[in-house]
Length: 448
Image (cartoon, rainbow, N blue to C red; front, side):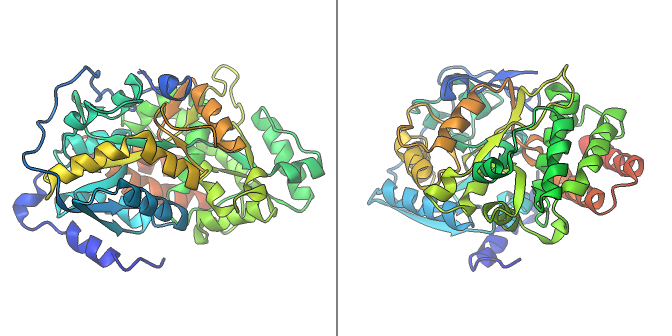
């Protein structure tokens, strides 16, 4: 994979300057923000949010150079952040953006934070936010939150660890099954409600010469979304988040049933997926060569604005067990955090305060129609049909997960689950051996 020119600088900043530098259930969510939803916390780590308190405001004026570490290496989100920084427009603060390949950023984040991180950087809500807060690798921004408006108490809870705020939410987007209505209308397809109907539809698509399910896992993380959808449908939300937190066994029959069910679906997946990026798979859907794609709404970045994007729709991943239903959905929250010891704390907190505003959110959701704003004050009048549907979809979700690599420990996600899922895709026959291996590694990681 090609890497941006700034990546060498990023890798240099990851290196700790000294050995000392390396020392180391349910919650309401988007109901108040998006009109209605519930997010159940990934672990019991989040403390209830109270009123004020928090970090003291930094001494001195907000001036000088501010470094902003961004994982928005794809063209659309990269341009969005360029517009956001420009609109910040504080003449006393010069924002220097360091953009790094998205996957490199995620895989190297721990070393990055232990080394010389940027003052402000892009990150995610969920377990990973909590994990770094508890490690002391990110800064308390509770004072910034004293002036934040339009974020529900539940959104604030999703930004909190141990009673303090460490995260500024920005945008969110749902994972679902995406398709092109024009293709479906031509073929006479209808959205399946159950797994059996899903298989029957995929079989029909295959007979019609389409790739039933576009699929890619070259970068390791996209397959996590399929696992999440199946686990949520087969075992339910509580089991899913407990599994992510190391409280359920990966070699249990529940998890083996997930892989057994996935094995049934693999023949309908696009072949050679380990050599394909999600962007390439999305282009297969965009070119009307594939019938469906299980992914986040960001796949719309591979569609041209206007009529092309208007010909994109989604439905929830089908029901597998009627006792569990389809109420649990996945809608990750993207946002920003501050380094534990930023070089320019005053400027960092002023910039974070700006990023929490509807003004900043509006820039993103207008330029990148594959997302919706996290805050309730954002302007939704100009939302596309897909964005409006996403707002309702997330608002009506009974439980909302963040995504496998955000709801679990970063080391477990990167060193265990990425190779395990890729191994399953290559050779799906030894499910017992695969799940036993995952569980053995999970025991070691979650007990350290």
